[in-house]
Length: 463
Image: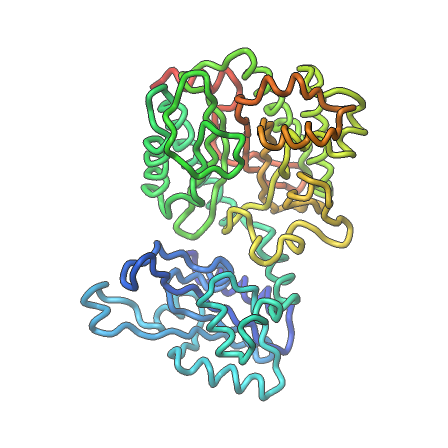
């Protein structure tokens, strides 16, 4: 938890953006795995954590913009709770920790909301993503359960996005510390990537590293020799020499801030000549994209420039052909690069995505593409100082997609399908870094994690 003044400042900034109504922030509750007393690891709602800072279940925060008053609702623990959990601060004490002087038990929340509505105040809330929160909102605000999400407040969504998108120094420090943890995770994975090792052995080791430094893994680890599957969470494969291992993993701090790093390593410690050729294409797209990052630049342009770098590289390998500009405009490159270049990073790995990706990554100046691949770009609008984002280009050979496109006879002016078929068992390569937009340019966060061919091969010798 940060100092109380940080949370007070955040709430005051929100008060400057909304007037006269009430903002309702339900925190998360415990969620059972397979029976009531056996719960998943608790993770607080990120916006509640941002404004109210308390990482415990069963809490609700309210801000009355007309009066300026702030409230924390929650129940004090019983003696039975103390027996199992130990002594706990009272709700009033918890409220004081984050600069709030008004607290009430949960059974007062319904009456408080009804009174506010009778006074003509609108209750603003963010889009819920958990079933129990939807039920709670439906009951407390008398909204049909199937209408709750559509009744979320666009004004509150936009206000929260405007605040959370721009990171201050304490947030940047949190993220950067987690990138340093990711350094240990990824270099450990590289050193372990030997033939005869199962993916799960490495995944367990690096998730343990994340847990030992704070909140554990920031998201389910992607660690696979089948890197052509973009979000592959299966860890049951045996590593074999000649395969590539893609590791997309990061750590979460105790305050909820994430790192998100991807590295690709050759099983056994040496890239083959063909792997080197493709790897250097992805590396060039990564490094050139990072160089381009600066305030005022539309991130969609950075994405398209990365696509051109990839296209040019694949042309040199004979996998693509023709005019690069026309091919990228048509989307031919998305056979190999079928996702966006990056996304916002913060308390959520895909930061603020639950509030609506089109609100987070797009605005009136740039609209989402309907083109396959390019449509998955999560961030397209102009960059601002304080944004933290990922740069993660990749090249993948997805057999089912290659077969579909070849059989459909599309983009034959740009793709040499006969040669592409020789790469069917190649897999995929992705390289990802976390980048802060500064006043004049950018800064790559954290201790540099090996990513050139020499750096990767050198660190893999140290097993």
